Image (cartoon, rainbow, N blue to C red; front, side, top):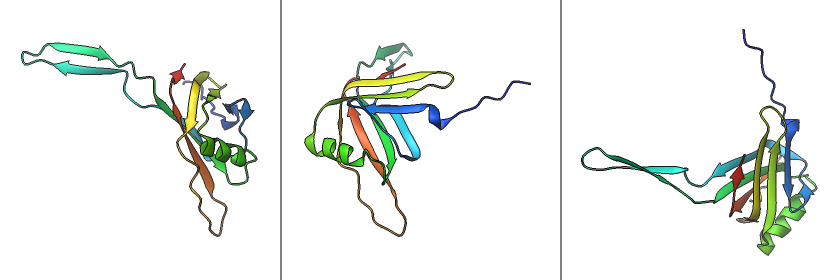
Length: 132
């Protein structure tokens, strides 16, 4: 029988412009390439051509609790349109590193007010996403 593996969300770290994010919401963070790595075309006689897609764009989505001390920082970044480096590291097994040297927030987080404190979601457009 294979030994069970353990995932620990405490092994996830996100750094935006040199600032470590804390106070994650339930969904923490996601990293997604905007396009597939390859496209495939099939000719009339069944010949297949695979083309590499060199699009470096990606999206990093971070969910923070409303009370996270970094909410004002991220709101300020969103309003400024400033390009910043963003890194998401999973230090568990297997280790995963996701980096962009040039990213900006697409917009400020939506604002919702209710009986309970909701999360705030921030989407970074990454201009050169690397997923290792």
